[in-house]
Length: 450
Image (cartoon, rainbow, N blue to C red; front, side):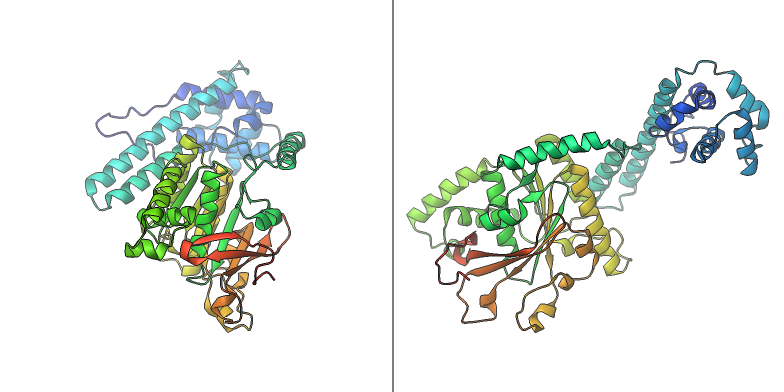
């Protein structure tokens, strides 16, 4: 960000020329500190342009495996044509001679980084103020932009991107122990379907799960059943970003599924007193469950990510569900549609890894499956971008044979586990009770048990 002063405050941005000089001089004298400092301090964290160039020179020499001292740094800056820009030999000599104490390098680094973050907060706040005064952006979009910018600031710096094998093995043992004891809470969110959980062990942390099907097959009903099990049985908090249905419609569908009440009778207002009692009881149980619904019809990845981060921090949610991927607003409407969907897919995967929870997104498939003899969808049918298939860790394709074959028993739903990065693929059969919008485990011995 440019080092422009805040409005009405003069040239009073937070910085310390002395700390910047002390840090640079300390790095020249103590090369062993460079590897640690570069994890915390970027060249842009220095207020002075000359100090930025010197720091880049130090990092370049360090990256080449050469010692950093007064002579090598001067030669590197000369090679880059920047030696005169930084004040030539006299200034480098001043840095060297003015920093006799090596042990304070980490302190200087924290001061430089802290000042830079404060300057960035000022610049970002000014940008938000400018947008507010110009009044060219809707308030919801403006709020999302403001939250996104502040969240970006909160994540400044290079996070440690490595771990020892010992640390990784310790986490692996903990996860193995949890699975051995039948615990899903720390490792994954169960779907509630016995055969599907046996095949996938639930939806795992850090993973992107895609649930895809043709329109009107039952994608939303399927994922709402998974959500209902997660919030009631697993006690797992869930964010549901619904771009297709309102929160009221979602609440009605959840109540009908949980109470086993005919959803069509509810819409007609033809419920009996017993059915109303069942709905009231179901509503009471659901009202205590940790489900958070965003039913705005226009949502961007910025909004979804901001909501997920806030809820993860405040309520420790365990899963994010989006209905559905192709309705998410693209970052740049001018990009080709395939690139727009690819960017959204990558952001969903990144969100899963950042929050360390499963991110589940519904997706539409194209009409190719309609022309096949068995009508079963394939991963190649995912609409508008092959990157969805690439980024997803697990892909579930839903298929209802009774939509095409009259001899097939009504209510059979095939869940095709077409991809599982860390497990087997296969098919699972479920019962779809349409009037309740409810999926259930297939009972052996039913007419459509295959």
